[in-house]
Structure formats: C-alpha cells, structure tokens
Amino acid sequence: MDDGLFDPDCVFCLIVSGKCGASRVLLEKESVLLFNDICPMAPHHYQCIPKRHIRNINHLNKSNIPLLMEMKSCAIEYLQMAKVNIGEFLLGFHKPPFNSVHHLHLHVIGPVQHIRFRMKFDPTLFMFKPIDTLIKQLEAKR
Image (tube, rainbow, N blue to C red; front, side, top):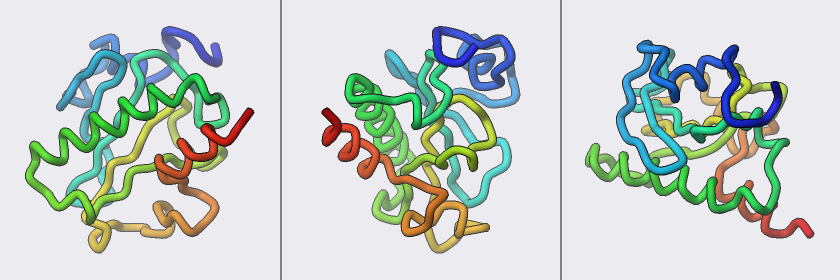
C-alpha cells in the first residue's frame, strides 16, 4: 500500500490506530498527531504525522497544503505548551531516500545547538527540507 487511510505494515499507522504503545501521543488534532521520537537527536525531538498514510514528501501536491499547515500548527502549539524558544527549533522533513519510516513525518527538533548528527537536519544540505520551504514549493506548482 502506498498512500491511503491505513497501512498495517507501517509503524506510524499503528501509532495512529493505538496498536503500538511505543510512543505516547502528546498532542492530537483532527488530522494529525504529535509524539516523542523514539531515538531523539536533541533534548526535544518530536514527530508530527498525518493520521492517514502518505508515504513521503514526494507524494504531496497543492491540495495537501492545509494538512501541512495543520502539522506545523500542531508542532508550534506543542512547543508553546512546552515553553521553549520556538526560534531554536527546526521543523522539516527528510527527503527520500533519507527518510527512515515511509509515512510522512515532520521532525520537530531542537534546540538547534544541541542537535546530534546536525548534518541530517541541516536545511542548507540535500537531506532536510524545512516545512515552510515545502509549502512554498507546493504553492508555486500549477
């Protein structure tokens, strides 16, 4: 299964369905949820995922912009609740083939100065795409 409502072989789909207790949901919205990364690369490292299965950023189009906005809003809301400096955080996606789970997931990670393996999250390199950049690129598509 590539894109659709649920992939029984996808760990993130199992988290959405409540069938995987490995990650506790920290914040849930209509179409997305946010939870701790199971292998954090910084003091704060979360994943924000859509409830429906979307494989990666290459499977997005202009119609997905509201979903991306909801993901960003969820991430910011949680960071505000955690009372951290949002300016010290990165919000973005690994580009295929550098994503480890094949379910769209927004990395919410920081503070930037404490990120381990920083290259993996460097927006100036080829692996990581900030959410705002992705939204602008989708908006520009016809």
